[in-house]
Image (cartoon, rainbow, N blue to C red; front, top):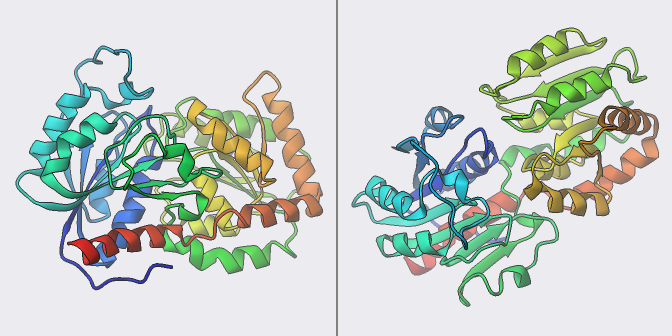
Length: 377
């Protein structure tokens, strides 16, 4: 554990986006890190593009200033050698870099923290002279970076995966132990692990991302309709406030044979998860939240960039994957029924999930960022 340095008074700027395509996870983990750095005395602010489905209102509600980049008018042409997710940016990298630099202004930021699959070493090198330190948050290890600190919270990731992608002196914080989770997850860990040892399964949590643009949540509820579950089963569905299928899911929830509530703008996900006996979730950022609390999970891969994470979690015994194929409904029903009925398997999944991360990784990352300033200015 890295000791907490004296509270510095420096600016930290986050360059991160949310959209219908990107989802909400990148912004949520940056908000987690921003909250922690704010507690260390940093002044954090965000630079975000005005994509459909952006989260700038939430960022401001959380107390952070946001510099808004213009909404893209048309998709830029894709060229060979661009990052696989370059279309997520909405503009070419050079336009984004110039607009970001303008948004930063004349402030000499202590840190620029970039969490964006569409950006690589070219964008970072353009911004580098204008800031003191540059950090990248990534999950893919699929492109080069020009940074001095990189955090990748993926299970099974090693420093060797970035050996040819970052400068030789770049500090790497890799692996699920560095998952950027809010302190509430660490705080609820002991309670969550203890209560599920004796609890009869009753509470089911469904959380398939803040956007769920393909409406997998409603498909899950339709699949559950025919499940042989206890009469007092309690289902909680978590969605983003601007998820495009939110009303449809609410309508479906009202017709379920068990008490089923749909919630959004959840302030304390750790409390919901720690009280859940089983989760149905996507292989995104909430994977590490479920692991920290030892929640057995039926998992879906909602984007190709989640497949490696899902496979590693399944191999570790922390989750059971259900593919989005023709047999999806039957497979969901079978997986949920089996896990509700099999306490021994739920206990094993809980133990193996809890061994992956403990919820303290975000604080370790924040302490490293703050400590870097204390050591080097």
